[in-house]
Amino acid sequence: MIAVISLSLFVWIELTAEKPLIRLRLLKRRNFGFGTVAVTLLGFALFGSVYILPAYLGQAQGYNANRSATCWRGPGCRSSC
Image (tube, rainbow, N blue to C red; front, top):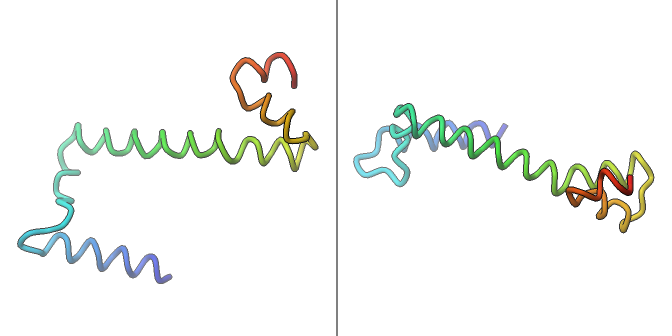
């Protein structure tokens, strides 16, 4: 709840400030907005591959740390899992 209120307050202040810290109106530009969304989705994908996948392999599949790390590397998934 605090995060939602803080984000709303931040956006309101940035949109009404004479010299904003972050120019949020740049997101209205099509290329910049799509680029920002693409980079955000890429960040989620990288987070998933670096953190979530090894945690899933270790906890749900019962892999030890070495096997999970081998699976995390690209070609390792096809050969050792």
